[in-house]
Each structure stands twice: as C-alpha cells, then as structure tokens.
Length: 219
Figure 1 (tube, helix red, strand yellow):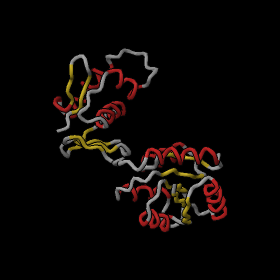
Figure 2 (spheres, one colour):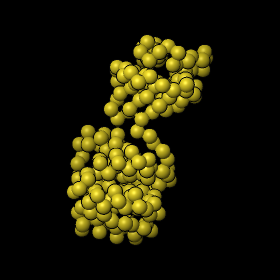
Figure 3 (cartoon, one colour):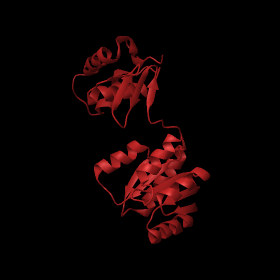
Figure 4 (cartoon, helix red, strand yellow):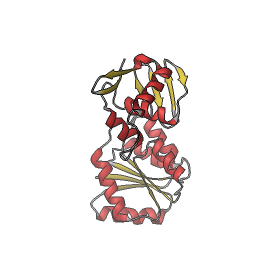
C-alpha cells in the first residue's frame, strides 16, 4: 500500500513515515502543498495523509484541486485544527476522513486501510439528475439552470434522492437517511416535504410509486 504524507513539520512527518513503513506501507513525503500536489499528480497512491496548514497551497486547496481534476485518491486530513467547521470544510472539499493532532497512530493506520479498501471511487463535487443540479458543499440547487431556494430539510431530501437516481426509495429509508433512525414523529412528514419539493423543482421531477416509495426521475 503506497501512501503520500504531506506535512510541513519535518520531524513529525519523518516519524510518521517510519511508523507507517514499519506497518508495511510504502511512503512518500512532501513538506508543502505545491510539492504534495505535484507528487499526487505524478504518482498512483492508495491514500494521501494531508495536513491542513501548509506553505504554498493549504490542504483545502490541494484536496479541492485533486477532486476538480477527477482524482479520487482517498484523503485523510491530519491537522491541529479541531474546530467542527474546519472538519466540515475539509470533508465538503472532498476529504474522506479527518483526524486531529495529537492522534492515535493505530487509529490512523486503521483509517488508512479502511479508506484504501473503499478505493478511489468517483465522488463528484456536484450531483446532476436530469436538469437538476445540486452542490452539496454550498447547499445550492438549480433546475434547468435556474437556482431554486430550498430549506435545509428540503435540500437534504432532494440530495438523498439525487444520490439514488432512478431508484425507488421507501418512506422508511427516507426517514432514516434524512431525519434519523430514532425519528418518532408522524411518518407522513415525508409526504409533506415531497410536496414542498415538487412545488419548487417541478411536480414531475419526483415520482410516487404507490406502496413502494419515491423516485427522482433521471431525465
């Protein structure tokens, strides 16, 4: 398993490399974002450990650039910044996982192996189903090029359907995925929000299959 570690703390990076090599990894090092991006472009890696605060390009920029270039190599962000919005930005930029310093080395190894098992699957920054386009990071949606204003819950429901284009999704699946598995309210809330969405993105966009669930039309 070949890993790229991008961290400007040279002693820390060298120590991390030694530990990973002892675990059977092949490790390349970079100490700034520019070199890290170059190495990521030039070589095939199973995973990238990417520090957030880097000279040259920061971790957000490196991650966003790779994803914009359709490079889906799994990325674990490793940083001293532990604010929840830093984590949100890192994950929304395209990272697969996030660890804060100080961290448990065995946990890092386990997470690297986990993201490598999932592989470099395509994770597009935007979702497009027919003429509906969603940007999950910016929480924005367009229908036929015209932006549509949605509430947070409406957006979450539309994104849930958009990630399963053409699939029939049951009311229970929607409740578990858009609300949560412990939801104890009226399950008809799903029908209410589907109605809201239809009023905003078009009634024909969401199909009801009686007794089965809902489907976002793919075209």
